[in-house]
Image (cartoon, rainbow, N blue to C red; front, side):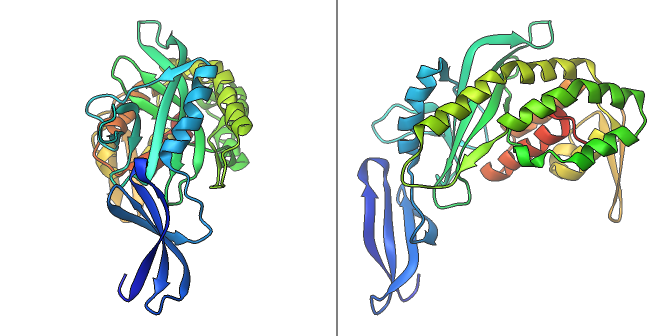
Length: 318
């Protein structure tokens, strides 16, 4: 910040977080503030941006989680796209992860009983994930979350209700395929219900509304049977060419190249996808969540990829 001056604005000493007003060299004001976290400048934002520390979000969410009988879901060893949250002289919060700069945070919780999705002992826990951002375009959010206990894969159902569009439904119907029509009948009810519990967010304000947070968490909890039913359907349904096409177009190339059941060929801007091995949607889903959970990718881009996967397979949009 050449020729600019920083003037103290607010500090959260226990968190290693502080903000400063940015002034011109003559000490006249500018419309900006700087955010420093753990000794690093992490963002420059407008003066009216309200910083809500991750630590304060956790103070609000943890009691609500206990009130709805949810427990912490610790991050698996080997997770690559985030780092476990911790502070000096404090026990690490194993259920909380941050991006390398600390701008984005997610905290994961699960409800009660595990569900045997396959009927062969492949148990999945269902819960919710709370997100927060400091100085970026990530706002406070609550999203459905699952943890597969066989492989410890994580799934964040990041697709928002606004992403359910009528034209995609029409495309599926027009295919005239018995398989697709059968899938459509199975998923349409879940799709309608998932519209109401998809990731919702609230932009930064000076106070997080407890009733709103509790309401969204309870909505996610209520939807457990909907999501688990969809998972069980995925165990019996085969991956479709349209879904494979969507995976090839919307997921990272290096991830797609590692999927042994499909092959992608490119001819200029055209992408040709061939399913080389018949697999279930559940197998495809777990292959991809394995790569997302343990792959070395940026935090926010990984969350975006979870969103794409949610749209392509769980809601079965092609």
